[in-house]
Amino acid sequence: MKSCPSCRRLFAADAGFCPHDGGSLLGVDEVPVPPDAADPRVGSTLCGRWHIRRIVADGGMGRVYEALDLAQPERVAIKVLHPDIARDDVAVERFRREFEVSKLVPHAHIVEVKDFCDTGDGSSALVMEFLDGEELRTLLKRERHVSPARLVRMLAQATQGLDEAHRQKLVHRDLKPDNLFLCGTHDGDVVKVLDFGSVKDKSQAAKKLTMLGTTIGSPFYMSPEQAQGLETLDARADVWSLAAIAYECLTGTVPFVGKNGPSILLAILTEDPVPPTEKGRGGPVPIAPAVDDVIESALAKNPALRPPTAGALADAFGHAYGLEGTHLDWAWVPEGELARRIEKAMAAMPPAQARFDASRMDAAFADAPTSSDDRAMGLPSATPRWVLPAVVAAVVALVVAVVATVVARAH
Image: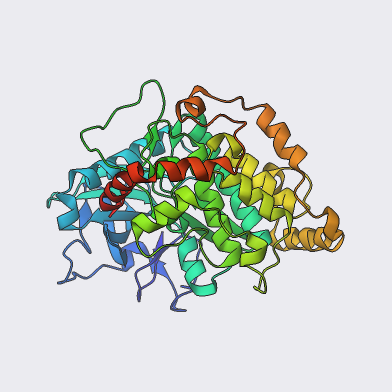
């Protein structure tokens, strides 16, 4: 491998120049890493294998480094917990669980976690594939909106990874823009789903972690059943979270707001979101009228009324914009080509016919019979949508205590 003498970034052996500094690259052995008085890990070899080259970023949980794998020359990202976080059994278990899930679900659209190890100085480290790009959160902070073509492609890829996890009865439970990573390419993003440390294992052989007793999730993207701490939560909670993310990408704001965590969750439990076409009116991206129906379905209080799979949600968004086929067809279509198809389809849509084709979703639902979990929630699949807010409002007094506990633990 090669390295930049200025920034110490790592590159493939056939690279010639550093795109960040513009300088010529040298062999990695020709670019020693000087000691860093502020961080003794820089320049050291972690767990006998990972030679740390530079600091990449600092987060609330830990510090991220770029490192060289000495066993098979490649660059990796290593996240090391901050000392105070490393004393938290829940945080350490989340790290360990993310590594274990990665072994269970190797997938092109789920970040590969290579190792979990003790650092030798009282902390824990997670070793992952190194990703070039940015989190969706960073993009939204900078641009606020995502174009329909970019969103459709993003959903088409991310849902493939999620559907594979769901097939193995693994529910992510913490989907948010921070956990969707966009690796930029000439044709568009390659999406990686991050952080399966909060996963709920619904399989027969699930390892119960009742001693940890934690409910994880960002309030803005937390499904009603997760907000209530229901054990019956399943993959459709992730569908809800993805829909909330898509809503934010198109409108520039989350579907449910509040002054604090409990008020946000109360809104999720009792209110309906403003339709995207209304919320995003006058915005920089076109929102097909049919998107309103997709969002209404995907953010239903009753899980049985939502798209049955993450892939079905991605299909619904593409169809709302007039695309033919399924998310499997769109995932690798260049973003520019998708944009042309969407523009052409929307131009041909008579306003009166631009509503969502409900028969497509009905067909998907026909293959997903109501589960015993739906009945356990007291939410039959035929429940009219207007009933749910009224039912939830009647039990709000009982839920508020749960909500407050959820938010306290999530922070």
